Length: 251
Image (cartoon, rainbow, N blue to C red):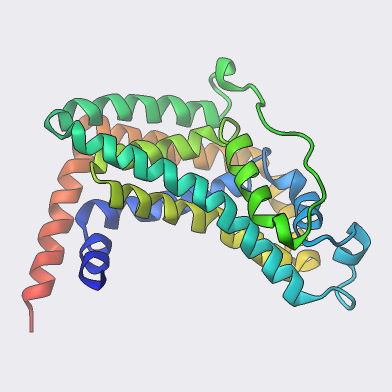
C-alpha cells in the first residue's frame, strides 16, 4: 500500500494534475453555487442555529469540527467514486490516449469559458435549494446529497478534474485526483466551521471580487484545456517523470 501511494503521488501526471485539482476545488468553494449558502449548510450539519454559529463564545468547536468533517467525507465519497469510475474507463480507452486528450481538452476549454460566464447555454443553475436540518448523525448523508445535487452546478471545475482522471487511465489515480479536488473544496468548509466570523471576512472579499475569481478559475481551466489539445500536457508529464526518476537516483 505504501509503495502504491508513493508511486502514485510521484507520478509525473499527478504531480502536474493534483495542484490543478486542488485549485479547482477551491474555486468551486468560492463559486456562487456554494459560497452564499455556507452559513446555512454549517447550521444544517451541526444542528446549531445561526445565532449560535455567530457566537464564538458559546459555539462548541468540537461539534463544529465533527459536523464539517463528516459533511466533507460525505461529498468526498461521491466525488472520489466519480474519479474512480472515470479512471477505470480511461484504462479501457488507453489505446486512444491522444484522441481522448484532444477531446477532453476541448471539453475543458468549453467548461472554462462557461465558468467565466461566456457560454450562456451552460449557465443554468441546477442544484438542490432546500435541505433538511440534520445535525451530526446525518451530516455524511447531507454531504453525499451535496455531492449529488450540486454536481451540475460545480460542473465546470469538477468536469475538468474528471477529464484529467479519464486521461490518467487508472482507477486508483482517478480516485487520488478527485480526492485532491475534495481537499480543495473541503478544507475551506472545515476552516469556516472552526472560525466562521473570521472566515466570513475573507468570504466578503471574495464576493466583492466574484467576477475576478470566476475569470481566474475559468482561465485556469482554459489553460489546462489548451495544454491537453496541443499535447503540451503530455510533454510536461514526460519531463516531470524524467525529473522524478532522476531525483530518485541521486545520492
